[in-house]
Image (cartoon, rainbow, N blue to C red; front, side, top):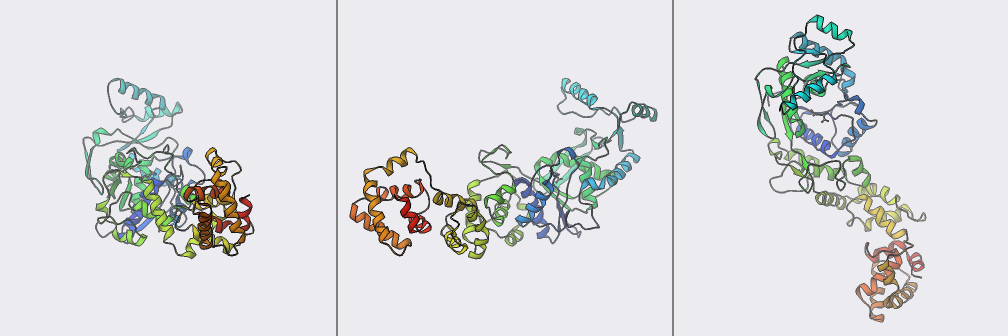
Length: 480
Ligand code: GLU
């Protein structure tokens, strides 16, 4: 690893909000930095201007911070030595470096139009060429030819001239030794005709100037790496060490895609639904890394300590929703009560609850659910099930409340409840027992009519808890 300070980065394009895959890349870079006392840098690759969306940069950064993946340097916390941290703010720098390559004779102006390139591609495909390579039409243009194009109003791009038959070899942190031959790669554009660099060029300049030592990124970038290595090679710069993380797949083994409706894609969705940041951190950590003793719960500190890049998994990681919910539930269950109240009260207050309930009463109610819920939103839904009465019953529910047993059980229970002075789980349990003895009905026949009368539903939390939460008066009013 040499004695250079470890510097890694997460470099999203602000074309979307923080995505689960992006968060995983960021997490592993962060762990790498923290494991080796390095710096984790957050910077923005915003050269694809038409695709940038408002709010995306903030979401990318703030959602990371929410997850506990805190950058040492970022767009909001720049180190003047390495800035700017947004590519669009350093266009003159890219221009200067592109010109250097032109002056060295390893990059050249290309005046081909989109239409000409499309035609070139079609011809190549028609001739059985599998992947398109620029035919170097503009490689040796004379000054006069260039002038003629300029007069036609054409604006040039700058293309890199790939070396002939050169092998790009590198040791990937995840996949081991990887090789590419330069002959398989066409001369690609490094500067667009509007003066904006392409990703493959800008990323090299940024990584070099920011002294990035390691790059962990998604496997979709593997084929970009030889292009980037070509640029390093021309400048005589030492490239960072690369690691390409495997894809995330859904339970059918298919690459996670925006169409997977049962998997939430964006961190903000997790936040809004009451996932715990530490739980997601833990889950993402195990999504691409295997612990040797099947340990499942890791704090941030434990993850940093345990992390070892050589154990990054080289097979696709399966996104297991059940495991995520289990992990989230674990973190909720193990919160101390103060932290739990802070986490849960916004979800309690989102429910349709009577205004008369004080914060202390709400906190007590929330404790009933602490071991039940998987995510914060569950408590909102469960409280709504209790407080918002369903006016229309389903067919089965209607049948149960009109059954013969209901006609006996409900009035008997109501009478006992009216006489009860102290309402809590134990006293309610004991009057259910008395009703059972008195009427001879038990189990579903006993509980279901009352449950449906109270909430309109056959499911939900323990009925003793429901009655405790509703209170005597409200319960009685629903038993009519
Ligand atoms: N902006 C690129 C992306 O969002 C970053 C690629 C890289 O890490 O080099 O995929």
